[in-house]
Length: 228
Image (cartoon, rainbow, N blue to C red; front, side, top):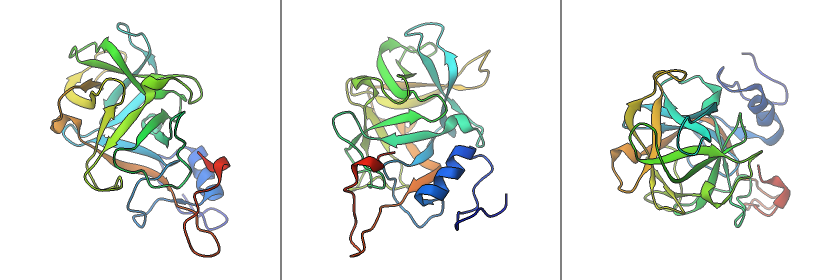
């Protein structure tokens, strides 16, 4: 892909055209110069233990809640693995603000507009806690909220983190169970009460919102309309 107008970066082929346009409008980072994850960023999340990316699609569970399924896929270039980092209904997450450790966020599936969600339904393969995608155009309920667990003060892109479901305290996990048709080979994603290597995730491909700066050179997070 060639260079775009207005100094836009050369983007990976797997990024949807919408994300390419957003990179031109908002000034996003695709390189390594931004070392932390920021609000409004669109990214893929890798389960380190099983080498699968968090994924969803318009396929519903045949049991449990019947909501949109969430899985793990080995494919790197799949637009159904992009998630937007957003605030909650009680705490906005302004575009470009670094995400703090212990901060509660929502992860919205870009292609369907539904939020990463969990509840006390049983997952279909492992009988752990079901994880689904829920809501409409990014709006669901309090069961869409996840707390970022990391070691320092900010969610660093190179750091392994965990996501704890706020309402149930369960951790987003993969333990390797594979689905048959119609999503053959995809791994079950579920939530588990105890931390382990199965619940470690890392930020991978994506576009990352840069913190804005005012003319005096200090960080400016005051624009309410800039939440992604």
